[in-house]
Amino acid sequence: MTNKNITLRYIMESDMADYVKWTTTEVEWCEWDAPWENDDPWDDFMNWQKSLIGKRPERYAKLEIDTLDAPGAPGKHIGWVSSYFADDEETKTTVGIDIPAPACRRKGYGENALTLFMAYLFEVEDVLYTQTWSGNFPMIGLAKKIGFVEVEREKDLREVNGQQYDALTFAITKADFFDRYPGLITC
Image (cartoon, rainbow, N blue to C red):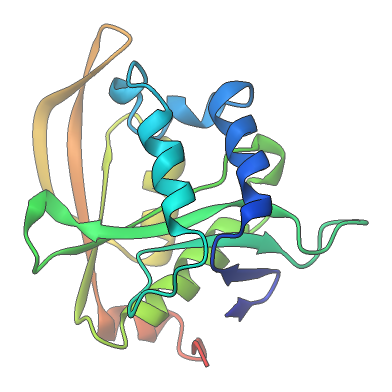
């Protein structure tokens, strides 16, 4: 699947070198994506990545993001999009995105990747959610740009660096999404 300057694809064995780098040396992204979990060992995360190689699930739960316009390196692997059930409720499909390298942010890759993934999920969903914490300004900004609206706030649920933050849930309907992105299709 392609949208402007990115492609979404299945994970490959060659991606594992990036995941090693993103979990050992280039870890700044962990300050944004659930930093209260940073004390957890990366073994489970890496084993999960490896378990996905070569699999073709009926519905995508996770896809890798490649750039199409990286100077001198089209097809550069820059991150992933994923979906899961919010709060273990199988009626609330939630989306997320990670682009670990700061140099690959603020170029439209995140919006293009997440909206393409969402268009795909909207083939079977009527509402999509995203969840984050009140200190994750990049994700809050992206969610609002795409058209998500805040539907739930749990006060002081998360502690990061000794400071309390709210847990946030955002939602967007299929109709509202395609009003904003009318030409976006996944075929």
